Image (cartoon, rainbow, N blue to C red; front, side):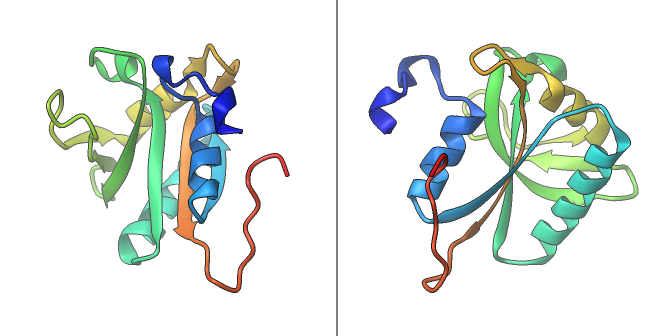
Length: 141
């Protein structure tokens, strides 16, 4: 399945999930939308992730919506400050942007951006390691 991907132009959220599941991660995706329920779920998932040791949240977002250079990007979300409703993005391109705090509503807007390769919104990737007893299925099987 990987030979179908054109990595030269980056990957989309579907391909990211495929790579994760092929590496024994349980993956759950929530495509971005402007509804309050998306924001509520994202807050809940962030709190669950930072309080535990087994879950990781990765944002698929459009950098330009955060006044950064570039377009589609993936970075893990490392912390949530409830009082200011901000999330800490641990940018994987550290040479370009250090870790930075972003208002959750701003990130939501960046996650709603449409990926031209899939015609779908970007979004939230929630993952945890598959247990040895748990079977995993690559995307589409």
